[in-house]
Image 1 (cartoon, protein in one colour):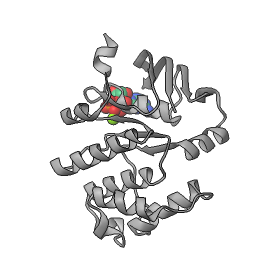
Image 2 (image 1 turned 90 degrees about the vertical axis):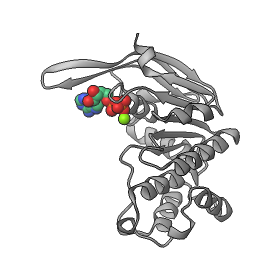
Image 3 (image 1 turned 180 degrees about the vertical axis):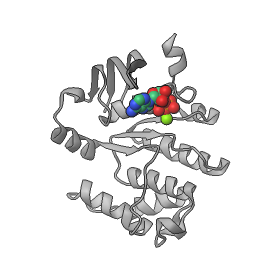
Length: 219
Ligand SMILES: Nc1ncnc2c1ncn2[C@@H]1O[C@H](COP(=O)(O)OP(=O)(O)O)[C@@H](O)[C@H]1O
Ligand SMILES: [Mg+2]
Protein backbone atom coordinates (compact mmCIF):
# COMPACT_ATOMS: atom_id res chain seq x y z
CA UNK A 1 0.00 0.00 0.00
CA UNK A 2 1.26 3.44 -0.77
CA UNK A 3 1.04 6.32 1.65
CA UNK A 4 0.46 9.95 0.88
CA UNK A 5 0.71 12.94 3.18
CA UNK A 6 -0.91 16.18 2.12
CA UNK A 7 0.00 19.44 3.85
CA UNK A 8 0.35 17.94 7.30
CA UNK A 9 0.58 20.47 10.13
CA UNK A 10 0.79 19.67 13.80
CA UNK A 11 0.68 22.13 16.64
CA UNK A 12 1.08 21.21 20.28
CA UNK A 13 0.36 23.28 23.35
CA UNK A 14 2.84 23.76 26.16
CA UNK A 15 1.06 25.60 28.93
CA UNK A 16 -0.89 28.29 27.10
CA UNK A 17 1.50 28.67 24.21
CA UNK A 18 1.09 26.57 21.10
CA UNK A 19 3.99 25.71 18.86
CA UNK A 20 4.31 24.11 15.45
CA UNK A 21 6.14 20.80 15.16
CA UNK A 22 5.23 19.82 11.60
CA UNK A 23 4.73 22.61 9.13
CA UNK A 24 3.13 21.63 5.82
CA UNK A 25 4.69 18.25 5.26
CA UNK A 26 3.72 16.59 1.98
CA UNK A 27 5.18 13.49 0.41
CA UNK A 28 4.30 10.20 -1.16
CA UNK A 29 5.75 6.86 -0.15
CA UNK A 30 5.33 4.27 -2.88
CA UNK A 31 4.24 0.76 -2.03
CA UNK A 32 7.05 -1.63 -1.14
CA UNK A 33 9.65 1.02 -0.35
CA UNK A 34 11.78 1.24 2.77
CA UNK A 35 11.71 4.76 4.15
CA UNK A 36 13.81 6.17 6.98
CA UNK A 37 12.72 9.37 8.74
CA UNK A 38 15.77 11.10 10.20
CA UNK A 39 16.33 14.17 12.32
CA UNK A 40 17.49 15.24 15.76
CA UNK A 41 15.60 14.50 18.91
CA UNK A 42 12.53 16.73 19.20
CA UNK A 43 12.23 17.46 15.49
CA UNK A 44 8.90 15.61 15.20
CA UNK A 45 9.69 12.05 14.04
CA UNK A 46 7.44 10.31 16.56
CA UNK A 47 4.68 12.82 15.89
CA UNK A 48 4.88 12.17 12.16
CA UNK A 49 4.83 8.38 12.59
CA UNK A 50 1.93 8.71 15.04
CA UNK A 51 0.01 10.71 12.44
CA UNK A 52 0.72 8.14 9.71
CA UNK A 53 -0.44 5.38 12.10
CA UNK A 54 -3.62 7.29 12.89
CA UNK A 55 -2.68 7.40 16.56
CA UNK A 56 -2.19 11.19 16.57
CA UNK A 57 -4.56 13.56 14.77
CA UNK A 58 -2.85 16.28 12.73
CA UNK A 59 -3.96 19.88 13.27
CA UNK A 60 -4.61 20.03 9.54
CA UNK A 61 -3.81 18.04 6.41
CA UNK A 62 -4.63 14.60 5.10
CA UNK A 63 -3.10 11.14 5.30
CA UNK A 64 -3.94 8.53 2.68
CA UNK A 65 -3.17 4.87 3.33
CA UNK A 66 -3.92 3.22 0.03
CA UNK A 67 -7.27 4.75 -0.92
CA UNK A 68 -8.32 5.54 2.64
CA UNK A 69 -8.06 9.09 3.95
CA UNK A 70 -7.53 8.28 7.60
CA UNK A 71 -7.81 11.66 9.32
CA UNK A 72 -11.56 11.72 8.55
CA UNK A 73 -12.19 8.09 9.58
CA UNK A 74 -14.11 7.44 12.76
CA UNK A 75 -12.24 5.61 15.52
CA UNK A 76 -13.82 2.17 14.86
CA UNK A 77 -13.01 2.13 11.16
CA UNK A 78 -9.56 3.51 11.82
CA UNK A 79 -8.73 0.74 14.23
CA UNK A 80 -10.02 -1.94 11.82
CA UNK A 81 -7.81 -0.50 9.11
CA UNK A 82 -4.88 -0.39 11.51
CA UNK A 83 -5.36 -3.99 12.62
CA UNK A 84 -5.80 -5.27 9.08
CA UNK A 85 -2.94 -3.45 7.38
CA UNK A 86 -0.49 -1.82 9.75
CA UNK A 87 2.27 -3.29 11.91
CA UNK A 88 3.18 -0.66 14.47
CA UNK A 89 6.01 -0.42 16.98
CA UNK A 90 5.94 2.78 19.03
CA UNK A 91 8.82 4.07 21.16
CA UNK A 92 7.21 2.64 24.27
CA UNK A 93 5.86 -0.60 22.77
CA UNK A 94 5.69 -3.14 25.52
CA UNK A 95 4.87 -6.78 26.04
CA UNK A 96 2.08 -7.95 28.33
CA UNK A 97 3.94 -8.76 31.59
CA UNK A 98 2.04 -11.90 32.55
CA UNK A 99 2.47 -13.67 29.19
CA UNK A 100 5.57 -15.31 27.78
CA UNK A 101 7.17 -13.76 24.73
CA UNK A 102 5.63 -16.46 22.54
CA UNK A 103 2.14 -15.93 23.94
CA UNK A 104 2.52 -12.18 23.52
CA UNK A 105 3.25 -12.67 19.83
CA UNK A 106 0.58 -15.33 19.27
CA UNK A 107 -2.14 -13.45 21.12
CA UNK A 108 -1.59 -10.35 18.99
CA UNK A 109 -1.71 -12.54 15.90
CA UNK A 110 -4.97 -14.18 16.93
CA UNK A 111 -6.61 -10.85 17.66
CA UNK A 112 -5.61 -9.29 14.34
CA UNK A 113 -5.41 -12.24 11.95
CA UNK A 114 -8.07 -14.58 13.32
CA UNK A 115 -8.93 -15.64 9.76
CA UNK A 116 -5.39 -16.75 8.87
CA UNK A 117 -3.53 -19.72 10.30
CA UNK A 118 -0.41 -18.84 12.25
CA UNK A 119 2.67 -19.31 10.07
CA UNK A 120 5.07 -21.13 12.41
CA UNK A 121 7.83 -21.30 9.85
CA UNK A 122 7.77 -17.56 9.33
CA UNK A 123 7.60 -17.04 13.09
CA UNK A 124 10.68 -19.22 13.65
CA UNK A 125 12.55 -17.46 10.86
CA UNK A 126 11.85 -14.02 12.32
CA UNK A 127 12.83 -15.08 15.85
CA UNK A 128 16.00 -16.62 14.47
CA UNK A 129 17.04 -13.47 12.60
CA UNK A 130 16.32 -11.35 15.67
CA UNK A 131 18.19 -13.73 17.99
CA UNK A 132 15.11 -14.49 20.07
CA UNK A 133 14.71 -18.23 19.46
CA UNK A 134 15.75 -19.21 22.98
CA UNK A 135 13.36 -16.78 24.65
CA UNK A 136 9.99 -18.16 23.55
CA UNK A 137 9.07 -19.20 27.09
CA UNK A 138 10.55 -16.14 28.79
CA UNK A 139 8.45 -13.54 30.56
CA UNK A 140 9.17 -9.85 29.90
CA UNK A 141 10.61 -9.50 33.43
CA UNK A 142 13.23 -12.08 32.42
CA UNK A 143 14.22 -10.22 29.25
CA UNK A 144 16.52 -7.24 28.62
CA UNK A 145 15.19 -3.95 27.20
CA UNK A 146 16.75 -4.74 23.82
CA UNK A 147 15.16 -8.19 23.76
CA UNK A 148 11.74 -6.74 24.55
CA UNK A 149 12.21 -4.19 21.77
CA UNK A 150 13.11 -6.92 19.29
CA UNK A 151 10.14 -9.02 20.46
CA UNK A 152 7.87 -6.05 19.72
CA UNK A 153 9.41 -5.89 16.23
CA UNK A 154 8.84 -9.65 15.79
CA UNK A 155 5.24 -9.36 17.00
CA UNK A 156 4.49 -6.73 14.34
CA UNK A 157 6.30 -8.52 11.50
CA UNK A 158 4.83 -11.98 12.09
CA UNK A 159 1.52 -10.54 10.88
CA UNK A 160 3.01 -9.66 7.46
CA UNK A 161 1.49 -6.19 7.53
CA UNK A 162 1.08 -4.24 4.29
CA UNK A 163 2.59 -1.25 6.05
CA UNK A 164 5.25 -1.43 8.77
CA UNK A 165 5.60 1.68 10.95
CA UNK A 166 8.30 1.61 13.62
CA UNK A 167 9.53 4.41 15.82
CA UNK A 168 13.27 3.94 16.47
CA UNK A 169 13.22 0.13 16.27
CA UNK A 170 17.01 0.08 16.52
CA UNK A 171 17.33 2.36 19.56
CA UNK A 172 19.45 0.91 22.37
CA UNK A 173 20.46 -2.18 20.43
CA UNK A 174 24.02 -3.31 19.90
CA UNK A 175 25.63 -3.25 16.46
CA UNK A 176 24.71 -6.80 15.48
CA UNK A 177 21.10 -6.43 16.49
CA UNK A 178 20.79 -3.06 14.75
CA UNK A 179 21.92 -4.80 11.60
CA UNK A 180 19.59 -7.79 12.11
CA UNK A 181 16.57 -5.53 12.54
CA UNK A 182 17.48 -3.44 9.49
CA UNK A 183 18.10 -6.54 7.39
CA UNK A 184 14.74 -7.97 8.39
CA UNK A 185 12.95 -4.71 7.54
CA UNK A 186 14.73 -4.68 4.19
CA UNK A 187 13.46 -8.22 3.57
CA UNK A 188 9.91 -7.15 4.46
CA UNK A 189 10.01 -4.32 1.97
CA UNK A 190 11.52 -6.56 -0.71
CA UNK A 191 8.52 -8.83 -0.18
CA UNK A 192 6.17 -5.90 -0.81
CA UNK A 193 5.48 -4.22 2.55
CA UNK A 194 5.87 -0.47 2.75
CA UNK A 195 8.29 0.11 5.64
CA UNK A 196 8.58 3.43 7.46
CA UNK A 197 10.87 3.81 10.44
CA UNK A 198 12.47 6.64 12.31
CA UNK A 199 16.10 6.32 13.21
CA UNK A 200 19.11 8.43 13.95
CA UNK A 201 21.33 5.47 13.09
CA UNK A 202 23.58 6.39 10.14
CA UNK A 203 23.48 2.76 9.09
CA UNK A 204 19.71 2.81 8.58
CA UNK A 205 20.06 5.07 5.55
CA UNK A 206 22.18 2.44 3.80
CA UNK A 207 19.30 -0.05 3.94
CA UNK A 208 16.62 2.42 2.87
CA UNK A 209 15.23 3.37 -0.53
CA UNK A 210 14.19 6.82 0.66
CA UNK A 211 15.61 8.97 3.45
CA UNK A 212 13.50 11.88 4.72
CA UNK A 213 15.38 14.39 6.83
CA UNK A 214 12.80 16.30 8.88
CA UNK A 215 15.36 18.97 9.69
CA UNK A 216 15.80 19.76 6.02
CA UNK A 217 12.06 19.54 5.49
CA UNK A 218 11.64 22.41 7.92
CA UNK A 219 13.88 24.94 6.13
N1 LIG B 1 1.56 15.47 23.34
C1 LIG B 1 2.43 16.48 23.28
N2 LIG B 1 2.13 17.68 23.83
C2 LIG B 1 2.98 18.72 23.74
N3 LIG B 1 4.19 18.66 23.14
C3 LIG B 1 4.56 17.48 22.59
C4 LIG B 1 3.70 16.34 22.64
N4 LIG B 1 4.32 15.31 22.00
C5 LIG B 1 5.51 15.80 21.58
N5 LIG B 1 5.67 17.10 21.93
C6 LIG B 1 6.81 17.97 21.58
O1 LIG B 1 6.87 18.05 20.17
C7 LIG B 1 8.22 18.02 19.73
C8 LIG B 1 8.42 16.84 18.78
O2 LIG B 1 8.33 15.63 19.52
P1 LIG B 1 8.54 14.20 18.86
O3 LIG B 1 7.61 14.05 17.71
O4 LIG B 1 8.46 13.20 19.94
O5 LIG B 1 10.04 14.33 18.28
P2 LIG B 1 11.15 13.21 17.97
O6 LIG B 1 10.45 11.89 17.88
O7 LIG B 1 11.75 13.63 16.66
O8 LIG B 1 12.14 13.26 19.07
C9 LIG B 1 9.07 17.98 20.98
O9 LIG B 1 9.46 19.29 21.27
C10 LIG B 1 8.14 17.43 22.04
O10 LIG B 1 8.48 17.91 23.31
MG1 LIG C 1 10.71 10.17 18.95
